[in-house]
Amino acid sequence: MNGMFIDTSLCVGCRGCMTACKSWNELPGEKTTFTGSLQSMPDTTPKTYTLIKFYEHEENGRLRFDFFKQQCFHCGDAACEKACPEDAIYHTKEGAVVRNYERCIGCDYCQKACPFNIPRIDTQEKKMHKCTLCFDRLENGEIPACAQTCSPGAIKYGNRDELWEVAQKRLAEVKKEYPKANLYPSDKNALGGTGVFYLLINEPEFYGLPAEAKLKTTFSLWHDVVRPLGKIVPGLALGATVIAAVTNSVKKQREEGHGE
Image (cartoon, rainbow, N blue to C red; front, side):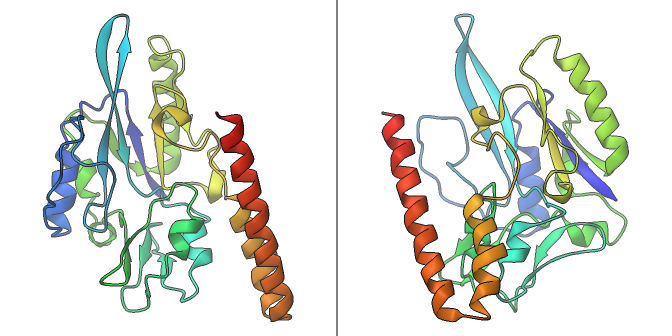
């Protein structure tokens, strides 16, 4: 199985990958508003599948930029696929997680289930959009457009096992300059093995990622308990859903309280 390795230590923030993605997928440009950052826009959208995020911070008295390519992880055990009530999300034989346009109803269950909050819903079109790993290119023996265009070589596509070995060797080198560097996900088999993995030069939380790549607790409860129960006892399942929602709300309030 193939995969994509993104080495953030090599990324220069040129955004060539974003341009290549827009071009290949025939996605329109979007009007943005300056927010005080050199980042193109605050987040990905239904018309922007990948985004180079700029993290500006001071280091040794100097301004420093760190970059992160936000996109779908293409999980082997994809929560979005499990959550979709219309079976509109599936894996291609190349491992890409894609959406069947006709079946999608834009319910946003996939977005809520995703550990990385990747799917984007076009509320007018009522369809979900996200990175497709250029599955149509893969089917024709080509690599994803972003990997094809990356001049610094920060995006690599190929045999996943071989890329993981390359990533580990690269990590050992990068750690000499960046002690906090790590591979993300740290577990090669997390979420069934993600089709996309990173070398980060800072902790995952620095980039807005969960510390550990795993399914959300609320999704696991819904998928493993509430959903199966609903097929047997609809009323009981509804009650379980309400309890889960209240519990999650209380937990969130407590966490916010501790953060004050």
